[in-house]
Image (cartoon, rainbow, N blue to C red; front, side, top):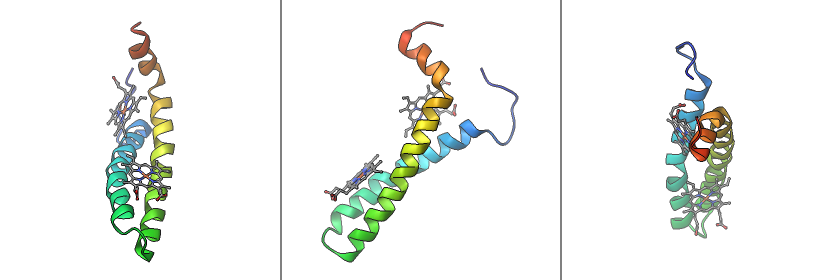
Length: 78
Ligand code: HEM
Ligand code: HEM
């Protein structure tokens, strides 16, 4: 499955972006909530949605890059 080991690997980069944005989602989301009704809330919401879009895009790439192995897990077939 794994090809030649290189320092730059797009699957690894995408997985890392996914992890980093995943950590940002609850943090920025909670800030949206606790600053509700203020100017800061509006800015936190932009931050939240910006990371959210990255999160969704990276998530789609992540699933596509691991599609073969994911299909094996879902069907139980090798
Ligand atoms: C934000 C959530 C997620 C994070 C942080 C994450 C992170 C990772 C990491 C670090 C790896 C191993 C590195 C690599 O092979 O690139 C991996 C592998 C994988 N991920 Fe995710 N992942 C997430 C969500 C998902 C979701 C939602 C799916 C399926 C719908 C999924 C399916 C897979 C599959 C199939 C592999 C390969 C496993 C293998 O090689 O046996 N991941 N993920
Ligand atoms: C792990 C993923 C996520 C977590 C934990 C999370 C968490 C939260 C939290 C706590 C709030 C505040 C709700 C409130 O003020 O009552 C919120 C609001 C919001 N989130 Fe997320 N969120 C996530 C993913 C996303 C994504 C992917 C998007 C879209 C790209 C998104 C868009 C929004 C928007 C637009 C609001 C504002 C809703 C409103 O105040 O009317 N979120 N989120």
